[in-house]
Image (cartoon, rainbow, N blue to C red):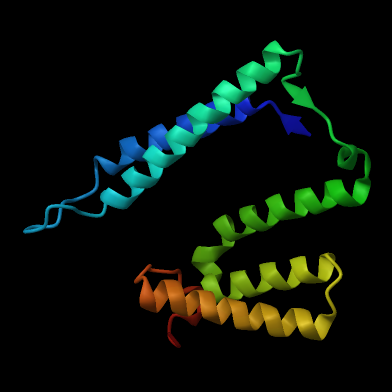
Length: 157
């Protein structure tokens, strides 16, 4: 399915506005001119700008006889619909299971399942899922100082 660009642009505009609004509750760092709200606001402003362009493009397309919603060919293929649903299920699984299980087990399981679903050989899927999980954990946990959920690995990490 393909939504008209005006619909997508309006949705992203609302999300970006909400994101920017939430940054006003972020604490300020004493002695610094900027704090943790700076980058989300910059990103939000960029998203709003791109959203405005999408809305203009979508309204022009609609005026030329376009539709608000255009189903694509993949919506008639059950495997592709299942792939789409599996991606949504993977995101929902992470939201629900990341706190009790932790980032490392959740990320590994999600990647392994998706790799296997999309036809990657099991050995390759396992090696790449493990490598990427550890790499992403190192980058966000150590380099970026993002507090990732530890879950069942709390005593190890």
